[in-house]
Length: 418
Image (cartoon, rainbow, N blue to C red; front, side):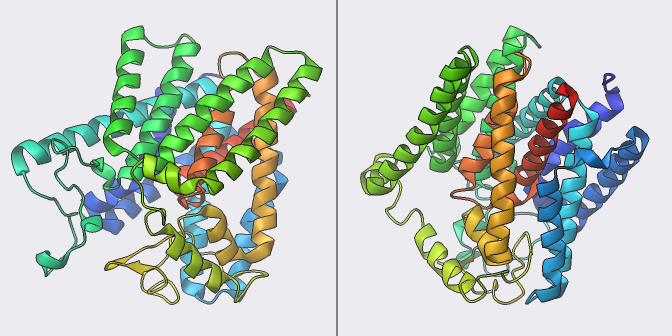
C-alpha cells in the first residue's frame, strides 16, 4: 500500500474526531450543522474509495449480513421512518469506516487516531478551563431553547463548571463517560506510537499525561474497567506472542477462563466493588433501564422492533421507555440489550458472530502481525466491547466505526498473508 497523501490523512484525522466527538458539533452547530459536516466528509470519503477501487471481498461476510439485517428490519419495524433514518446513519458510519480500513496502513490509522484524540482532549480541557475561569457558571448547548432554567437536569448541561471543584468534567462532548473513552483511545494510540518508535518522546509523554489526567478528571467507572481490561489482556497477548504454538493456546484458554471468572466475581461482589469506586448499587439507574428494555424486547423477541441506531425521543416506545429524574435516556446502556431490542434474537446471533470472529482474527493478528502494530486492533476492539457492557455506543459513531474498521482490517491482513 502506498503512503497516504496529506489530504487523505486530514480526512482520516477529521473523521476520527467527528466520530468520537459528534456531540461537540451537535452542541455547537445543531443537528443540522453536524449533518452538513458529515455529508461533506462522507462525499469526500466515497470519492477516495472510488479512486482506490474498493474490492468487495474485503467486506467480511458477517458484516454484510449484519447490515442486511438492519436494512431488512425496516419491513417489520414499528417506526419505519425512524428505522430508515437509523439505517442511513449506520450505513454512513460504515462507509467512512470502510474508507479508513482500506485506504490506510495501521501506522497511518494510529497516527490519525492519536492526532484526533489529542485535539478532542485539548479542546475539552481548554473548554472546561474557560468555563471555570471566565464564565463561572453552567453552560448549556447552543441552538437549544430551555424556557425554564430552574428545572433543567444536570445531564442537559454542556459543562457544569466542575474543573476546579473536583467534579466530573464533561469536555466538549458534554458527557464524562464519552470524554473518558476518548482519553482511553488516545492512551492506546499514544502507547502504540511510542512502541513503534514514531513521534518524539516528549510528545508521547505529554499525550499520555493528558490522557491519564483526563481519565482522572472524568472518573468514569466503565472506562476505568475498560482500561484495566485492555492493560491486562495486552500484557497477556504480549506474553503469548513470545511463546510457542502450544503455550500460546494454553495462554489463550487461560485468558478466556480468567475473563469468565472475573466477570462472575464482578457480578457476585458488585455491591462492594461499586461502593469502592463510589457508584450506586443500581449502576447509576442502569438496572431500571435494563429491566424496561428487556420487558419491551421480550414483546418481539425473534426479530426485534426494528433498527433505529440512535433512539428517537419523539417516537414510541422510546419517548417514555427510560425516563429517570426528568431525563429521557436514549440508549439501553448495554449494546447487547439494544441489539436484542432492535433486532431480536436474530440480531444477537448475527452481531455476536461478527464480534466473535473479529475478536478471534484480532487475536491471531496480535500473535502473527508486525511487532509495531500487532496488538493495536485487539486493544481497540477490547476497549469498545467492554464499554458496550454499560453503554450502547458500540452501535453508533466511533464504537461502530472501530468495530467495522478492525473487522475489515483483520480480514484484509488474512488475505495478504495468503
